[in-house]
Image (cartoon, rainbow over all chains, first blue to last red; front, side, top):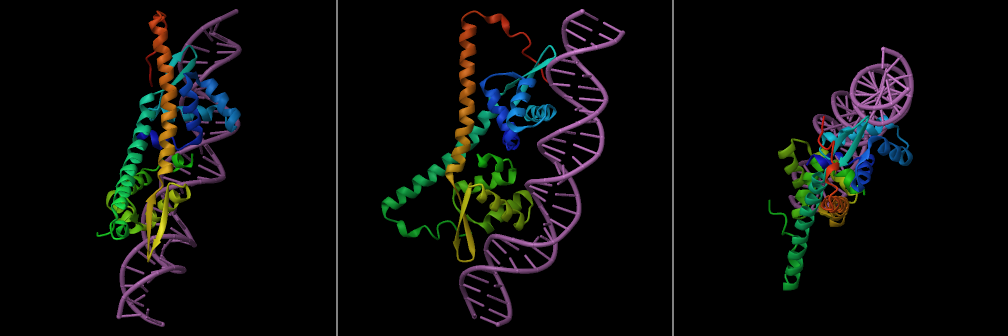
Length: 115
Length: 115
DNA sequence: GTGTTATATAACGAGGCGTGCAAATAGGGG
DNA sequence: CCCCTATTTGCACGCCTCGTTATATAACAC
């Protein structure tokens, strides 16, 4: 799960969203981020590198330009993780509801302790 | 999306996973994390506070202890975000496939590259 | 009250991250 | 060749976060 580590950055998240629509040359990414976040082009370049090293994006050479594109596996990895957690939680929720429905309502206190 | 900012931390992700199973007192969370990451109780306490401020967890008072539990909305938020991105990407992929199917095949010239 | 458990806060240091600027590299094109 | 554009990299700096240890608060028990 390298992806989540790297997506903690708002700027990088924005880049990912931008690339989700389709591949873009570094310059255009930089421009968008410059407008929205007020950061310089080299800064964006660095973020792109971080994203690349984390396997979130990849780049292609097109003459002098670098075309960056999203690697969907990475995003999917994040989605899977979050969904797994959500699922755990839902299971728990269902269990509680069942329990309550059965009338065992007054127990839940000592349930989780017992170390 | 405060959740993603905060979930970039491995320790915090572990805490979330632990709490996904069910609520736990701070002490037990601290113990688990101490065993697995070798960090101290105060460190865990701080992570819990960060998670709380980000709306990922919440706590209730039970005598001297604090019971921490996951706020599923936060996790769901992350899942939704990631899925949205993934969906964008899938749309794009579908579009490309359609294009290729139409016979425009010979374009993908400089596809492969990396550092 | 004193003592004990459970947890949070304070104070501090170390390290990492993100930034801008300036310079370097890569790839055209005259 | 030399120059121009696109992008990356080197450097210095400030900030923010993490971790530890020591200490405080809260609630209970005696």
